[in-house]
Structure formats: C-alpha cells, structure tokens
Length: 495
Ligand code: BG6
Image 1: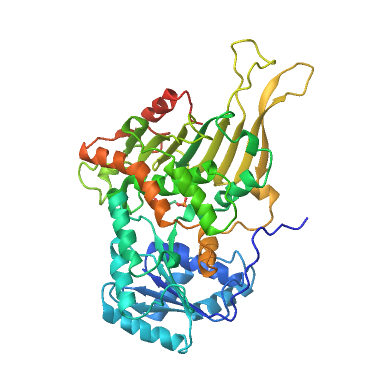
Image 2 (image 1 turned 90 degrees about the horizontal axis):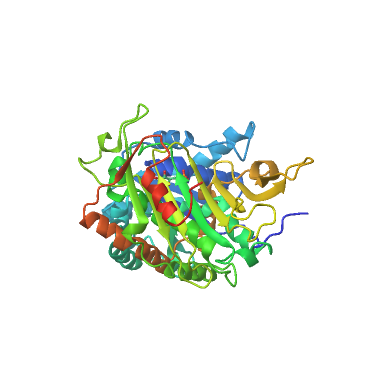
C-alpha cells in the first residue's frame, strides 16, 4: 500500500520567492546543521524556485572562503552520483556572505540594501535563522526591525524568525526574553526550535499512540508501571565548555529535548494535527507536572578516567564549577491518566554509551499461571529507540520452542533500517521545511516554554542557592550510583 498522507501535501512554493538569512553563519550550528539541511531541501526540491541564502556574521570573509566553509559539510544523500557536484555548485551560487556587527543598525541597513538587490526589489518572504548565542537574539531582532527588514505579522510577504535554545535559564529570564522578542516578532512569526521534535522517531510518537488501537487502552496508570527516558552521550563538552558551564545538562537537554519527548508520550490525543491543538495538549500535560523536588533529582559531574580529563579540568570550565554533566530526575504527572506513574528521565555526557531511548514498562501479569506464587516474570516493555539505529520494539514473553514449557522475553522488533527504504531525514531538514510551510506544531509555544521552566526552575534555583556539589562518576562509565538509588526508591531499575 502507498503511504497514507496524514497531512495534506503542501503546494510547492515555486512562485513565492524566499530569502533565508542565517545569522551566525560562520558558527558550528550553521555550518554543521543549517546549511546541510538547506542543501538537502534544495536537492529534494523543497525550496521555492527563487530562493537565496545570505549568511551573516561578524567574521570577515570573502564569498569563496564562505562557500568553501559551507561545502565541507554538504552531503550527497539525496543526489548521489555525478550530479551531486553540480547540485552543490547550483546551491552555492545562491548562497552569499555578508559580514557585520550584531548590534549595529548600520550593518542591517546595508544588509537590507543587499537583500533588496538580490531579491530584485520584488516582494520576497524572509526567514531569519538565528544561529547565534541567546544574549544577542534581542539586539539582532531590534536592529533588524529598525532597519526595516521585517514585515508585520500576518502580512504577505511574511517574515519569520527561528530561534535556538536556550530560551532563558529559568522561568523569569525566559518570560523576559519571550516578552522582549515579542516586540519584534509576534508569536505567529516565532519558531522556537527544539531539534528533537524534528527527529523521525520522535515525530512517530503521536502516530504510534494515536494511529494504532492496541496501545490506547493500556496507555495509563492501570497498565503502565513506569516510563524511562534516557539520553546519553559518550563525549565531553567538546570545546563548548564556555556555553555548557553556564547552563549544565538540565538546561541543555533535559528541560527541552527530554521533556518534549515526555510530553509526547504523556499527552492526550489532540483533536487535530493543527499547531494549536497539538500544543494545547502538550501544555496541559506539562502543567499537570508539579515542580521537581530536590529529593527526586540527582546531579553529577564526570571525573578524569579512561585517558579523558574530568569536567573540572576542561578548558573553559571555571574552578569549582557545580554545573552538572549528568542528571536523573523523577517527574510525576498528576492527572487521571498518570497519577502515581513515575517518569524517570536521565541525561548525561561522558557516559559509556551514546543513545536516546524511551521505555514504557508495563505492570507484571497478575496471578501469572506460568510461574510459582511469589515469582514475578519480567513485564512487557515498549522500547522506542530514538537514536542511533532507530527502532520500536515490544518485549513480550514467549514460549521457547521445545518440549519443555520454558518462557523467554523476546522482541517484536521494528527496525527502521530493515523496514523502510527511505533515507531518514535530519531533524533540521524537517523543521526548516515546517517553517517555510508555516507549520508551528513542532515548535515550542510561549506558554509551553513557561510550563517546562516551571517544572525545573525551583530545583535549579535551590541547587544554585545551596551550592549543591554534584556527585561524581568516571568518564566513560554508566553514570553515578546515586541515579540507581533514586530509581530504586520508586521500585524501578534503569535499563
Ligand atoms: C544540543 C545540546 O541541543 O543537542 C548538545 O546543546 C547535544 O549538548 C545535542 O550534544 C545533541 O543533539 P543530537 O541531535 O546529536 O542528539
């Protein structure tokens, strides 16, 4: 059967020209993610016929240098073979570089002039991608506005802004940023990106839950014992210590990537796939989660081991920093569906594995005929592997073939690689396309952001106020023992 298109296929925007302005064009994010994603969209004919890309940053660089930097990370995934080189040339011919100061109106006035020339003085949609540190968002947005580069909300041609986390560092600073940015870009023009929402398996969560009947009746506190969401990296801060130390792992990935996955697992079915309906349900479930208490949180830092320096020894980490590189937390959702089911989430860098996974652990079978009284067989588990090796598997109890009645846990396994021929898109490809098509359902709405901060802000502030020293764990280890103790308190074992 052909794939069923749940969303109407958007018309290709061939007659609506767009300029994509990448602010922070010389940085890592732009070079490694944004330009390759734009190229992939170009190869798949998802960009309008008349598009231009302008990279803006402070670094002085000529066009050739800029294009050489971009090409380093472009891949031929969507146009293999000889035509790829030609596609790259065509794409690069549409990219140009403009250097200027982020807080200078003059720089943006000159950028505006150049844009008008590139756009042939025709009405053109404009997408501003802010791949810049958050402390310059506001200055840049104001300068863009005062240079007259932004069209008002609801107008045609449109102006839209994509901003990258961190959106503040607690509820108050996030509210302040949201309110100040709203003076320039209305909520409808603002795309707060959380790239985990663009990952293929994360996008599948709603389909899995709401397009299949089998899970729905058991997706609640009567059948589910606990939910575990794990995110691990086996590397350190990799030259990003300056950024990382200001935020720590809770703000870097837990308050956003992990919490978003949790919201998709826990939310009620939306009445439609439209952005408002989907985000309303996410906000509701996040608001049902009371603020995390310190007793339900473990924070830790990696120490030197396996030939790798400890976090505190890394260049750029201030002496005695208490920024956690690992955190484990138990979050409760106090609503009819979930009351009493612990959501265990953990995230860490410098661990012994690199993966992201969601595990739904079901309750044991009551009065199980297959085992002696007092023995509990391992319960069913639905395991959603976000990365790497994307898969969905269901652990069931099965009879081992043979003359004996032996039981064994076995996986019903849907491996993406084996089941689907299609290339799995990068999260940024999918999300940038949504921005062009004005679909905000996978972007964080202001009230959703506020609800996410409400869960973590009190604990974060208490950790800092009381200068709580993180536990330690050796680099490339499974993490601190304290995380296991926390799980045990809820009768759970991390898998
Ligand atoms: C970013 C974090 O948001 O996500 C990084 O700031 C982290 O610390 C990265 O490494 C992980 O993204 P991915 O897509 O490689 O899992």
